[in-house]
Length: 184
Image 1: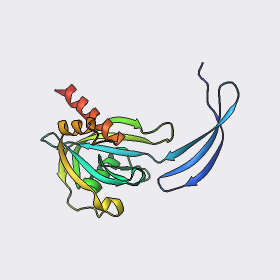
Image 2: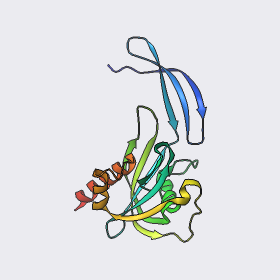
Image 3: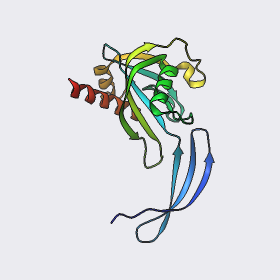
Image 4: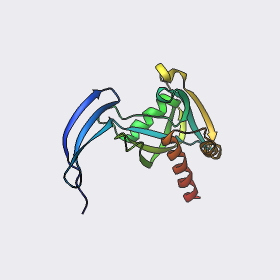
């Protein structure tokens, strides 16, 4: 029989725009209670945007916690009430890569760091890409986003050479490759 791990108390330590830091007191097997700290995250989406030449759209963006620029997928927060995940993916693709997709399909869901965060990112495959009519005005770190199209095979090499270390990008690129291979 599996233990229930019932939360007996929750304390919010920090409240932010993207995540909260909370401590849950959780009933453990054997009757004890243990504190578990974690980030309570709003959730996110990511997009493997693939053009007709089998090139993926990557964005290079500064990420302050790791103090460097990372190659990533166009991605963003699920922060618009009532917005479907596929619509969020389309919005983020337009905001970060100035593209829209004629077709978008679910690839995979990923818990990014389940030992420390509740974040779930839903990854999509976007095809039939078109330029957006009106460009999004980017601010803060997004003002310096570099957008590049890279052959999917080269993006996969970038993973194994340590050039792409963002977890959702790794998972999304590998999932897209697997899907494409299964369709061949």
